[in-house]
Image (cartoon, rainbow, N blue to C red; front, side, top):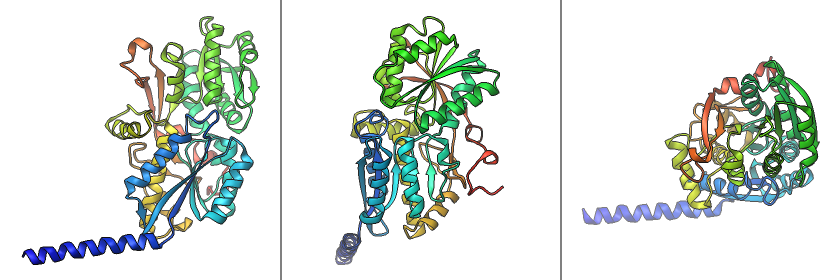
Length: 402
């Protein structure tokens, strides 16, 4: 018996060694993340998204189909041409099989065109422009975390119904901001409100005083911030300095993250209403994963970073099941398989590439309501996925059969 047991152990060791040798002999499975690593969206995605992607690879076991999983990352510096050039180089010369995140909408749309031309998979968590799954949709592109439609529907609908029936927008003057203002305007008007005007600002604007003065003079009950990251933080801080909310106007942060709230601090951010697909403290599953992320990154994850892990893991499972990295069979399995993890329950990937899941309407807590750092949100409502996202019947995606 002892000799037989020893023989089994030796056989197992040989098999493990052989498996490792096979994995080393095959080229790695390269997955790329194109991110804002140093600009206004670095806290939203950036290094934290790299950590999330690597966590997914590690949790999957580090290899698939006998190939070691390798996570690449690059900074697009919020320039669409750099995002496109990086995607082209990775697909054409570096053997990258799929790209994740691509924070910011203009950069994501640029990378999307490269992915479509090369029939490669693109899984987007950071950008928001709804045109990604509308006019610009692709057969292998999936919009994972949120979009301007779902963000606007949650926040604009809730605030208009609460009496905020006149709006003025302070809007980032690029694809994401334009789409967000357009979608929010639709829901303000649908709920009996009106828009009194807007002010457009460039990316990474240092001074919002002129835009805030326009918002104050408009007399609008709600000032909608159709921007994100450092721009949204600067706008909220300067609005507080201007005493905008003390004069009776309300701020609507149409895209906000926990990283933004932590940067602002609860004394300034308290009362803000925002819509997100994820919060670390929603339930036992979100808490367990988020604490693991925190152990590695020393910050709680944003929704975009959680989306990177979720989308990467769903992709790797599909690759294993398909037995190939070819885009068509992998995407077929991804669309046929519900997304069930800490990020989404019974999420589905539609034919337009939209991953449909529940969204949440949050309000930022007052300092006295919070039990400590990162205890920032209280849930106002859960918005079912079928109600949160643009109906397929209204889609402009040419892949949608009507």
